[in-house]
Length: 306
Image (cartoon, rainbow, N blue to C red):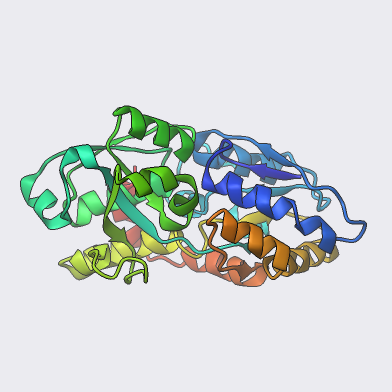
């Protein structure tokens, strides 16, 4: 059983349903794998459930947003888990976040937008998600004139608000956008105007990179910390603590075998899902690295991402 922290129709759901159709063949007994959506609080509810409620028997795998690891470090209320005690199965991809605005804003250039101070409403999910943390840190460091409207259940709901004119901007991963925002991209309704990345993505050689726009070392460190959290560790699959080690190893191997499965890769390509996986031990180490951030930076981030 996969417990996904977001509603159907978003990238986390799409990834998991594709994985679930193939991973069972690599697990002894070839079990059927089902997907349960448990949205709420930016996937915190599903993370708390995986840590505290799910039995540590290897039969429940949680999938929530990796931004919650940093939120634990920042003392976010409601977190009832210890990121360092999950057993990590792996991550299917590392995300590259993009800032997109509706064509109705008339915005085509990020520098001109900043200079104009034209405030754009962005749709967010909750602190800990890239839809919220990234706009907040870019507003504080490079002066993006954003008004964040948070509290949507997931990016599928943000997309509905975007299309209805309720909001006009979104921070979302390109990996997720390609599959779940395809119509808006192809029609030109959604314009990618800034890469919320540390380096340029091959698909966008001419679009500015947020990290390069930071004018101070502190601004660069703040941006880098947030972007790393929403990159390598942003799509974790995790088991409850105290799951028997032999079952952890079985699921880690099954996960990585699935990432190389020809039928899985063909289906992922058809759905425009990027597959660039990390295995369980690598994901576990990346999570540990988050908790090595120095205290001065934590204090700054608490204020920015509150």
